[in-house]
Length: 108
Length: 112
Image (cartoon, rainbow over all chains, first blue to last red):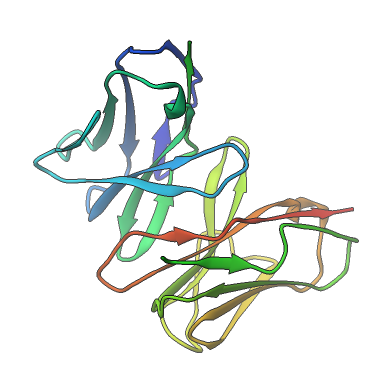
């Protein structure tokens, strides 16, 4: 069983739409959670950390549900520039486990 | 601005060759990591290092070794390259107690 599982997509949405991704993780003792963004043929970059209380950064909202072991990312008012692959990442004692990513295509 | 550099963007090697992939970071990070990324499988951890001369196996260390002689440099070695090691290799680093990882641009290795 994979440590981190994500729906690969693609999610095809129009500009201005709201889109949500979920990710599940298998180790209940996992300590830290993140969303990374990866553009085509580029390296992953941190989008945001995910806190137990939930956190928001502009149009992006991340939530953590420890009881159900899932993490979510909500993107409001999608922009063309949001098109990318979003990677869910879980940290266990400084070892990082990456989901295979969810691809988002925002269309004009 | 954190910078992680990798020695090559593209590399083509023959089966059985010894391959060296170099990674250098300029932010004095304690921890360094080597991953490979394959379609549908995501990033998988090969090895990581939390200090000079220290190394820990990740999830898929078979066929690989690493070297960390200096804090800023972490090398991945394929002792005898095989076609199933054709992949994108990504190096990353982070500081202790700061979980954000910074990635290099990747090396796309093809083994023929």
